[in-house]
Image (cartoon, rainbow, N blue to C red; front, side):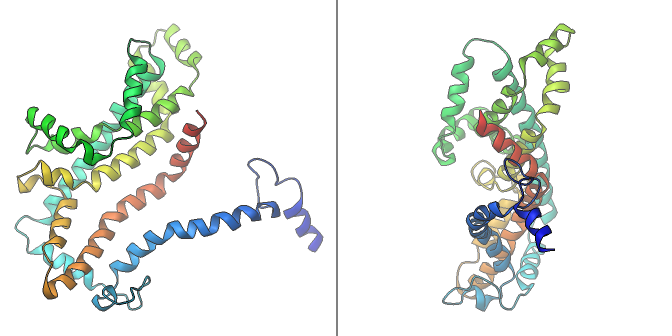
Length: 302
């Protein structure tokens, strides 16, 4: 029994690159990575823990990381407050879902088409345009708020549905990742399709998109997070209450309870709202995480 265990976990069949099973030589990686993984999981655990904390634990000193007496009161308070609002909560939820779906679909279409052109087509200023996109990776969102507002105002997009979608389509990191991924597709594949008489649209739709599905999944996750959690657009560009999203409404709801006893309930509501907004991001990442890892590793090799 012991000799079989030694052969299984110390033999050469599980050594080298991409081993099929566990080997004792991998212990050094577990020693390094397990503490880092626990450290990275702490924020997620804290979001869940805070959402179920009663008020006395939320304001306990010294602060407690884990909840001792979990309760659903924060969620009941949140839904009670939502039920007395002037506009039904279903309207905000519908806006968020619609905006997120349209933004994800449009972002994938625009970014992949632009990446295909930058990677496989020949035209003037191609390298300049890609350099501009690379420089844009350095800008933080707050640095472009004023020029973005001026552009949106000139295009007369204020107080419209499209103001939720069009600004989010400019995603430099998405275009960068997709171009790097398409660069890995051999030019011979494109040339063979062109010899057979295929158009650019046919090549893009029938060859490029199926071959970059992991990268598209990554872009879908990034765009989903950006659109679902975005409350700034409803704050800066929307005055019509019926066009605002759930992220804005939940943020306003918790910000209005700031004094007295209401501040205590407000913190519990904020924790419950944060968990509700976080869960869709976690679910979509878990579903598509394999494609995300494939895209990151592939782009890092280019």
